Amino acid sequence: MKIEHIAFNVKHPLDVSDWYEEHLGMTVVKKMTTSPYMTFLADDSGKTMIELYNNPDAEILDYANLHPLMVHLAFVSENPEEEKERMQKAGAVLISDDTLEDGTRLLMMRDPWGLAIQFCKRAHPMLK
Image (cartoon, rainbow, N blue to C red; front, side, top):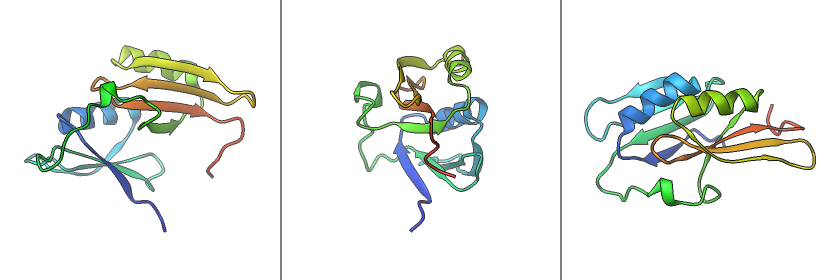
């Protein structure tokens, strides 16, 4: 099986989408401008997507108050220090900055709406 997407029910999907496009380089695959604002964004590999929407049939999680280890969206980062500075300028908030024993660097941040986003520079890449 191949993962197509992971979905997030959020309060302001179009604003979140615009921010992810501008600051994370994600590309719109499909964007609805009417409720429930289903928006599919692809990463730069074009093989994985996230879906953002606002569907009143389901609860919107309080992402800002969830521990980031409960749910986070992780991105590969070649330069975590640069990402940290760039994301903070774009309104993200730093949660943690860790270097593991093997040299892996993990930055955990929150986007401006509270969803945890992680930037990973793995000592040994896990995906090709």
